[in-house]
Length: 239
Ligand code: HEC
Image (cartoon, rainbow, N blue to C red; front, side, top):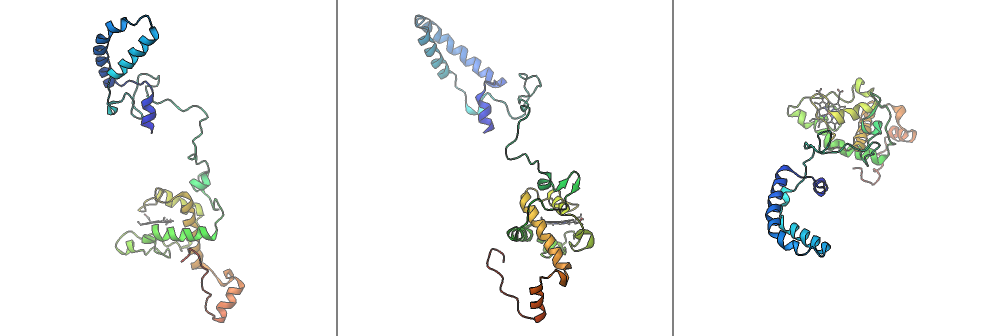
């Protein structure tokens, strides 16, 4: 697309220009005397002349007179073939000004609240993405004993140690976005929104390892005490 756009302007390239000139000369020599006879109708003469001139200079598309991206140029004062953006230009859809959402930071500190409200559907999606992208190393419960680790990869700290339980949510987002020590980053594979859903699921895993009876809803606690079987899980995408 950018190639097409660049091809529109009259931007001669050294090699193309040369070829152009040679063909032009050869052609205008043949045309000259004939075109002179048409001087009574200058408009017609011009049309005939340019139509013929265009037909005469054949240029292959691969040799189009255009600049490659960031190519040097003597045309513009800065020596570049690209013009600077007009002041006040706003990128559409890629501005990413919301640093809490896209970087997980407020200033240089990791944020400690989620940038959007987490619903059950977000948590389910987070679980699914976690199982795909993180569990091979961190294990399905986040203890760090995933299959890749069992085959020799460096073992990460368990998510359930106190240090990581106290880390703000922005820290987990940052590790996924930028990597951490031996761990590669997952910026390219996981969208920002999904990274936050994974963080929510990591928090759920942490809670599951450190909850007390006080965290269980009263009705649920009664059922647990009575020893009654758990009700069948609600239908939905969650498996
Ligand atoms: C290829 C294996 C691998 C995968 C996949 C992986 N990690 Fe890691 N992760 C590691 C290793 C190894 C470390 C420890 C790195 C080190 O200490 O050099 C680590 C460290 C971390 C830490 C920091 C722990 C600390 O001690 O501060 C967090 C948080 C984390 N990973 C989260 C994730 C999440 C979330 C995912 C999924 C998006 C993920 N990791 C995917 C291997 C992996």
